[in-house]
Length: 462
Length: 107
Image (cartoon, rainbow over all chains, first blue to last red; front, side, top):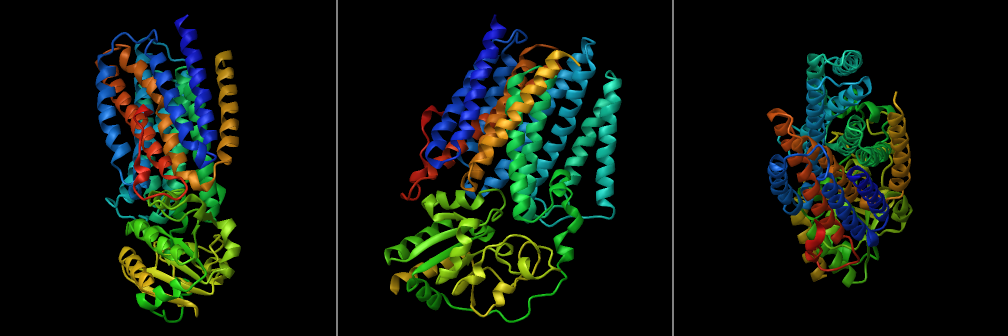
């Protein structure tokens, strides 16, 4: 009877989770929907506590308290600029939970000598995928937090080596299915998973992180699915499938936005074309024309239409609030201001939207690439703030460029272009940018935050 | 293969389809909250961790379970809080900083 009650509670929570994801379709409904999902979680957890296998509550209490104490700061204190590494970090947590459950259930099965082929298949998948996601996410976290070097780390035969290691892992899994009680194979599976996670993310550079973070999201979901199969729990299967689908869709969207192939996404083998090596193509020729903030400010103040293109540089400089002040000043003068958001601007899907929303910029001013690209021709000024590859015309017209084929924002169509940039160096991908030496482009060098503040001051005086 | 396993495959397949259809409709504007949200609901592995931690199958199992509970719990608490914090910011223009409201009934 209790069991039926628990299942019905799970069914209810699953429905709430799906409705919550549906509500994320629009900013108006999203918040309410997620509060419903939180309620669904509460119901699922409360029902689980009645489970017949649960006989003591001490360890649960300890774990729950520790988890809540860790979770609260992760929810409330992490700044929006640190969102990519925060998300990567919690992928590691989710996967670690799945992996430990897998190990625990395996040991339990070993103890009572009940490991069916089916169960051991699921547990093997769970531990392999889970372990891989744990270390992969921690690597991604390290790179995003800049504890580890953000540039790709490559060595000879890297892809061959990684794929062989993964093949050995899959081989171990196959072996385990037919020899369920071979604990050393199970251990080897976990260790290989941990290694593959590290090796997989090592060759991936900072600019490719949106794909990696999405992909790890998907893997974490699949690990949860495997848990569900292993312990006969439908809600884990449902949620894991939702999570897996979400990560999958995001990584495909991101890879499309970077013109990377689909198989490239599935195997995560981005190391093949390490951008820093391939950057040797035709360098941008010409001289950058510098501008001072006074002239740039005047140009903005007397424009009719301005499109701001934010990039990772905006996040690094934490300049979102200064951007908003500038927008307010310009709008007060009757200038029409919009933001053009490239899908892979920043380090995770939707990164720029969150930063600008944090600064209080209305979401209807944040326009996606397809919807704004035709408007650049009408724009008097395109203001590029710390973006580089996503506005690089080489993606269109230089077949030898490593980013050739990537969809970009049509910034070069604008009547005039002002680029805020820290220094004269190349962007994260190490590719030269012809836009910066174009005839209509003026460069305003300096820290994005300071530059935006100066521009604001000049607009006020104009 | 048991019939339970087949039913589970059905559940997986259908949930995958529903997820695919639902999530395809989410605009890029909300992709970061989406990641935070899936992170929060993937904390559902808490239910598996609870069973392991509470089932008293020796010290190792309990410790593994307790750590798993802590990890999953951190995702649930942190995930829902941060998603709410983020979604509160997405609104028509208002004063900066006002978006930081979080209601107390989220947990």
